[in-house]
Image 1 (cartoon, helix red, strand yellow):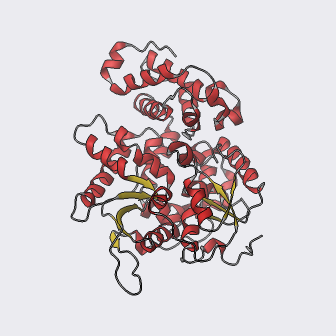
Image 2 (image 1 turned 45 degrees about the vertical axis):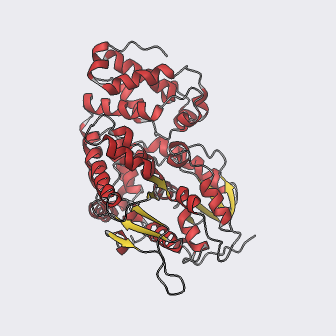
Image 3 (image 1 turned 30 degrees about the horizontal axis):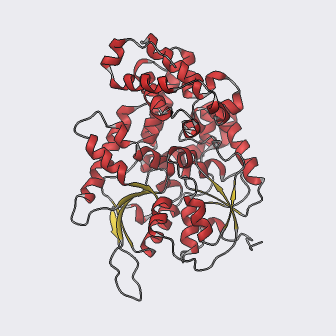
Length: 444
């Protein structure tokens, strides 16, 4: 696709030059339309990847303030990256949309309500304490949610109705040694840092607990590094580089202190696929910063999803294979962002489960970070479509590797929904996941 971006703009910003190169790789073939969730529910060219590429091309060619139509359609992108995964021309849409959103936030002044909501989200989500307080506040407003619509209604609808788990002691900075064998200490096979995240430490503390038990049982030393926290993805997805980069740099510093210490690190393990996609892109995000480029690239190279890491070290033989039918929902950030497709399913099979795929599994569930709050109409359409597809396979358990998808779907899917790592932990000697207790789940 030819573009005529002014040379002055290319010279002024290397990201604009990169955008021009990426736009030039698009041949307008339309293959991406078959995988784009917003095109699937809206059937509008501007809500497809190639339509958005045209809008960004025009935005850069004209310069200045983007028009309302461009902002609207870029906002509607879920950043699911299904288009990038299937593109025969190798268009790096993830990098293009990321900078496009940064350009919008730099040049376009949103309406006051939009600015306030987006600022609220990028400040609340990374801070577990504030996020927990916001949930308690949301519960007071939830009975009145019928009075609201749009984003406010979506925010109140998403407030958990069940009691939140107490903060877990495992989420404090500390080191977990491998589980002893025959009462004797074990020399670690590997040493890893675990990203404990932000939302996950409030909504579902069992995920990190199960991850640590699983790794300890497999002879791995696990460190929760002081100073690590939110990966920066919520702000990044909204084009707010100023809010995202301090979080990114804090993580890099925290993990490299461990990596460069006497015990070193073999990997940075992540059990939230949305965070994993973001961390694996740290190297790109900071490539132009001479003080951070090499450090960011080191961190990205060490990042592993928990299922990637478990495949590398090998899963123990299951203690009690259940044969239960598990429908595996692959988050977009897992299958498209990180191209991790078979590892989670292979591990579940090794652990003694029967694994079922979700029809139209390439389509996003509508969660996409804060998308379900900022674009609730499209998000709800995609959620209903995903729920129908999950129910259609008649599984006994649903599993995923991303807290966002679990939060989006678990309340309405009609069967227990757990993190993949909880099932792996259970199968190899850990406790039964809380969501399964009291359920009649005899193998069929």
